[in-house]
Amino acid sequence: MAQADIALIGLAVMGQNLIMNMNDHGFVVCAYNRTVSKVHDFLQNEAKGSKVIGAESLEDMVSKLKKPRRIILLVKAGQAVDDFIDKLVPLLEPGDIIIDGGNSEYRDTTVTNLLQAQRDYFGAHTYELLSNPGQFIHTNWTGHGGNVSSSSYNA
Image 1 (tube, rainbow, N blue to C red):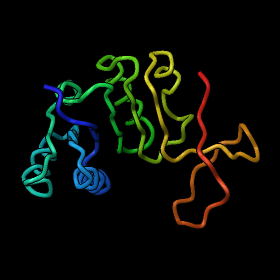
Image 2: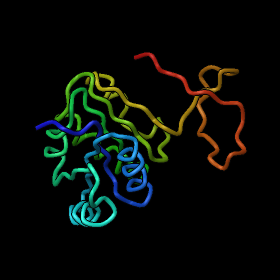
Image 3: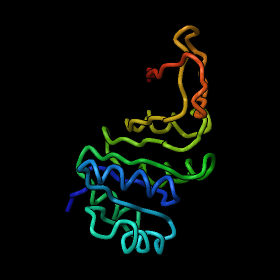
Image 4: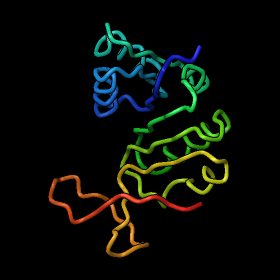
């Protein structure tokens, strides 16, 4: 039964903290990690007594999500992101959303495949300079960045 508002893949420290933050703000979050024992440990410890639910497979995770499905990826940048996207796309429908919350460069992922499959993709660290359209940069997360603003793309 679909009960989760959003899912998060990747239970390292940042993923666990983001899940608990969303939980604290009233969202039901489905937690998944490819090492399923991390899901069990998280639910029995940090998430104990919360509304966080766990999934033991991507199929299980997708089945627990309300539509349109929203999935945050917090996995190592690069091939791991592509691997998860490739596994998720067949399980999702047009209108579902994948958010890459890791440190990926938007050109390093299979965004074109998602756009063709009518799935939405957001890269959380890549922005286009308004002063120079077409120039994309990564945000400086030290707090000393430049004048940047996020933008959308046209498929």
